Image (cartoon, rainbow, N blue to C red):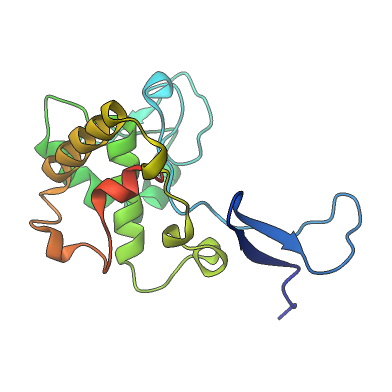
Length: 178
């Protein structure tokens, strides 16, 4: 295994970051990993594949939730491990569709509940992300509280109460990170 080329660091006034451990050549790859979680935004829904994010005129719709759309059976099959729990949640909240941030946080929670962390989580975990709650206005905090309530309604098919969430996971705090 190759030694790491970067390390994480924290500063009091500028947040978290990564820095190189050795001199670098232009264009040198430092780190590669799939994202912890992603979702197609409202404006691109139905235009791009929920798995590969490529645009296509004709997309296949998930027969269960009828929300997720894929460019073909191959992408749909690859997406199923990430989509199966979300699928139940999407079916349960019909006819309303959750905001993008609620769906994204749902995917984050499912990933955090997995026993094996992703490559990106090994370097920087979700818990390392900086929250900006202290910098938010009361109006923005109220908006996050509403999102937290919406999230609890959305995820209730998979997580019936907060004790089933990953350890030390705070929904309100999580929305301040995503």
